[in-house]
Image 1 (cartoon, rainbow, N blue to C red):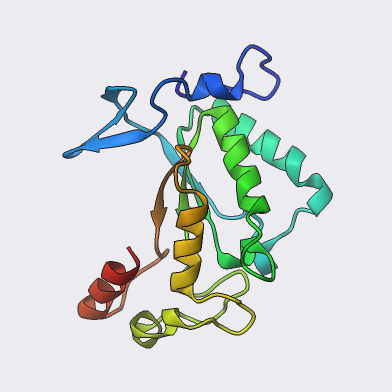
Image 2 (cartoon, rainbow, N blue to C red; image 1 turned 90 degrees about the horizontal axis):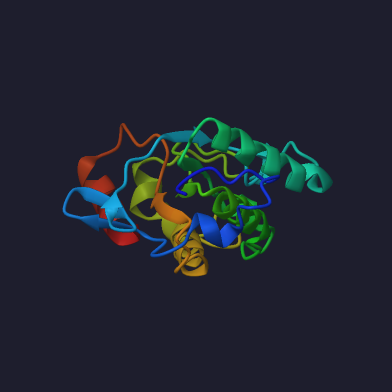
Length: 193
């Protein structure tokens, strides 16, 4: 199965959803999964990892909320989900990946791949500074007020933590890039990407 593991389906174990080579591979412009062309239906949601000031689901209700959210995505035949994975999702030290791991676990159970979106150009969910040319030139190299890690260190830490996790299809560095100098943007993406 590529998608279809609902939580109440006792015959569908997490390993069944990812049997064989679980990684989506790229050959030129073609994506493949288990040697077959991989085409996906994707949606975006922002708050499943409960980032910082955007968290609205009480901690005790989050497991059930995630289970229901992913069951709904399975019913809709979604195969890829893009979501915020801000540093504010990783606790006060920026190293508590439990909220993101809970999302990965539910996504793996359901057979849905994830694209982590690392930040928002307007600043959101705890880091309210707009990401302008100055921030994209040098600001991302230093921690912001209330953040223990720089953006760059957060990106590296997140990628290292989920390295080897086939459920994570990829990363989006920034939501809403635009209005920035092409040279500054190119240098930022080259450094972080």
